[in-house]
Length: 440
Ligand code: GLY
Ligand code: MN
Ligand code: MN
Image (cartoon, rainbow, N blue to C red; front, side):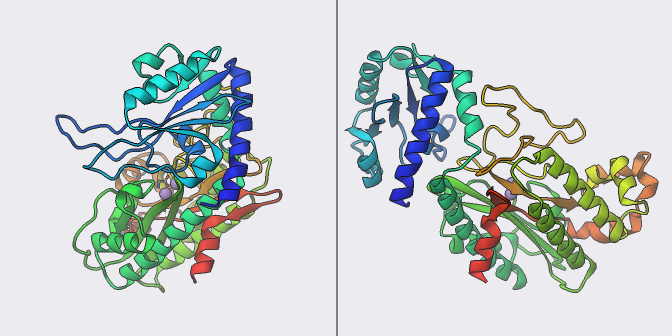
């Protein structure tokens, strides 16, 4: 936590809230962190994830039941929950919050909510932003779309504090990736590799922004492979790791792919994908459409398929017939920040309205025109996914595919290379490559 950047960040967040409240016609808003949820018929709670609108003001996850009152022209008021609890360690009010917010501490949730209700009663038309509105606060407009659309649209542009958090999250993730690569090279299983990752990233699984994908051999062709085999396969051919880290609630989302045989065909394909990924990033400027970048990624995959003998047709033909869609079925990237797939990726304007992707690319989450300070991932992939390849084989373009070559690569699963970038005036800051360079 950089206190100076945090304080500047709060100024920007306050300006955005003022604009959003004005636009949506509200004088104030209560923002609730949320509460932990118990599993069905159990007294154990699922890991708590705060409301991201709360987290942007209060970047610490130890905040269950706390609330904020945002009222332009007034200092933000924090109603901080600190239960009297000898079963757990109660949260403590952080010094940075006390210094920047008008904070009051409550031991009882009911007292906290009563205090919020009393504060709200002094406001004309308050909004309530949170998962569920408690009874005594339920009269306020609950998650009004005009307010949320405005906030979500502007959240794409990150403050210097947010970029700093994401840079640190990338450094944690890259420490984990470096250890995981060494574990793979020593022949470790998926499970043991993930333990190495966690130890080096210094995070628990609950702290990670998403369930790590640690995939050896054919598992690398399962886009969100979720298991951790306790034994390595024989022979161990390939390794795809998509694993992130969090810093003050901000996510890193990083993928690398490795070949066991550094001189083989799969290693060459990985190297060429790495080059293609860097070229895509080199082309990013404010003002370009992300959908155009996604189309450029498909062209790059078409060229890889042709140059590695996986198709017999030209790259143009592989694009036109839709062959590349069987090898790259996900989007090139997504906004990233407080949520690993951050909100607003398909929003057309602050007022709302969606810009859906081309129906040929239904999985594309980001369709916006790129602007300065936007943070997103660039994650082209090329996979050998039996379900999609079976459809391709049976379709009209099946004869353009070199199926012997597909059989050759299928045991390696697939490739994804994923970096997190922030757009600058004339290009990007690549938080992931920067962290790998520091780690080298
Ligand atoms: N880790 C999920 C993704 O790359 O979007
Ligand atoms: Mn990822
Ligand atoms: Mn991603």
